[in-house]
Length: 282
Image (cartoon, rainbow, N blue to C red; front, top):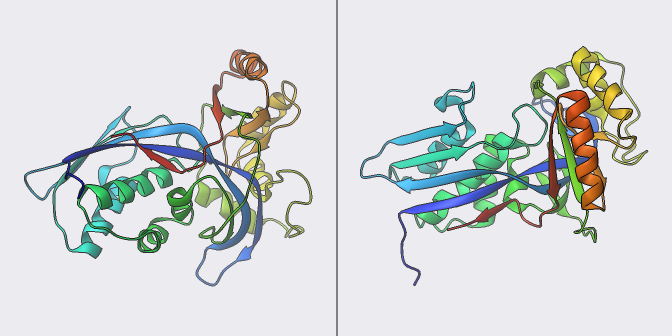
């Protein structure tokens, strides 16, 4: 029997979308999509510690413009407590490294890591399918982060199929502009545009949401144009605003990143693919 611990530290990995097709709006207001999710090594850090009372407390560093009540970490903890009936208090310290409003799933991966961490910390012994049932209540791509690696996501994104790959040595460069986009606003803009061809992957890493994001944000349109002068093969992740490219050489990745940061004033992250959506450190 494993010894019970009172604290846990988890890395919650970001994701990119290796292509994303929007297949139409659903009666429930969500959209059916067909995408390839890929976990990458850029990660938020969560420290969870049991309390002597029943309070749920969250501290975020650096501070973000989202209240604790609206943060998916607290929503995940509240949902898990509600479903399990265990009202144990927990203090959660979240260190944010994943840009917000960047299409990298920062909030969703934090929620998934919270479910995993509290399931272990409280010794609830919920199975993967039970955790995924909770995850979909929190967001369409939260179930992916419980799985991680490379998956094809269909339906709202919650229907997942593992996809094999052999490119572990590749470097992913993320280009994160100094502004964010709202996923809700991007989808609303998409709904207002003329329907586009729904064939999946008509070109490598094509993202249907990019057209809407560029229409919505003149800043992003300018950023994308200037970025293409530095790096020809770049693609938008999720609903934006971040772009990415994939290279095999670490030195090339460093050179491109420095050039982009100097020319565009953006933040660049050099990452690798990961096989999981999270990592329990201790």
